[in-house]
Length: 239
Length: 273
Image 1: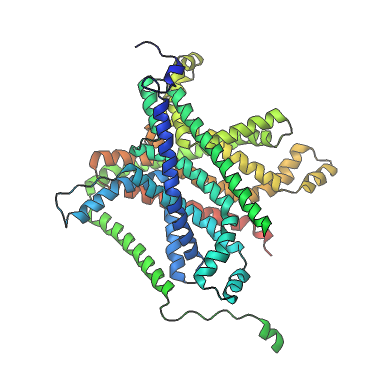
Image 2 (image 1 turned 120 degrees about the vertical axis):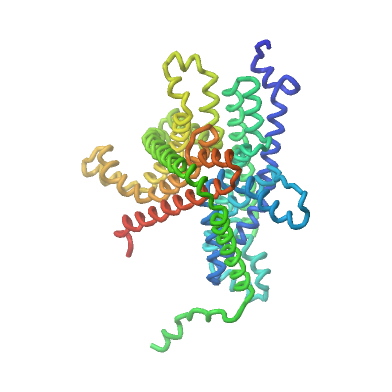
């Protein structure tokens, strides 16, 4: 095999690896974006549970965060990826004995990342809830809004603004945690870079490229969150 | 007397009966209890003396590897974080720019990528490393793990240190200077004792994050706790390999968390009113 220059290796097309890595970047971004709404929703409800007056709800929510913040991400991922098929297999054997189950690595990664993201996001939401004065709820009730309406129209807009910087941190760590899903075989940035490294023997080149991709994603998302924050601030000023 | 008694707000009466949130709460707690009982009964039913005899010593050894990896890299990271924090706070543009780039790189990229970059990436420079005699160090996966983890945690610890030092009011520096203490003395005797109280909790969080992140080295063939679990699972296809390891990590993290809370309560006792 003739020695290839770095630029051929990094070109687009059959000789180069840039297209594979670009495909991996898309998978990475899709995984993070698909996780975000699920994680935010679960995190919000867990935070609601944690600040409820009902002790049993608080207990259930606290167990949730203790477990998913205490387990290493990798262990949660492996438990889910290898444990879930076994569990489902046992369940499905009652209905159709011959069926086999395989968990898709994108799906497994999405669920595990959502569990982890939501347990961190719930702490952010909880501290934001505590920053909102009680008078806001009382004001909502006194003008005749129902509990749900007060939450949606009075509390939530303020909550999001307070929680935003904390959620940005959660998003950045979610973006970094997506690289772990490469271990269970999802063809995302790191895995494709690893394949390229193994085939071409230029490991330093391709792993640095993967690092640069993650760095670039972090920079892009900090620009995006800055823009969102500015627009939130603008809306605040118009009031 | 009666006027003040009327002003005091009474706590709302406790909800009686079965409001919806209580039903949901009890259902969720029951779900967790069922989940816990399920795992315990699974471990009980799947109890396999041969499995335990074969892998329990390996797990213990792996626990030792994990703990030493975390301890060594935390200490090395703490040492390395001092110059980085100094650079971050320095007025010199070049120095602070370099330190900023270091911190941004290590906080902006996944630890897994950094570990791969050290373990597989440095292999590209094998002839050069052999020439300087460093190859023997980087040949070993454990050393690579320590190297990557120390560099990573140094970036985080530098930010913790910087934040803590900057949280001490400037008047403390000025007061010390007016007493004739020089900079190093001021830092050691006045600033750091106040800063470390602020820094304790973030340092504790960083320690917990490192314990959790150390599972990553299993991927670069280090036989730490997670690495032994991977091996046990690959040999036996028994999911209890991962359940046991999850329990060990959970206990470890909870112990650390409570220890840090206890220490914090102890050292902030003079600040309580």
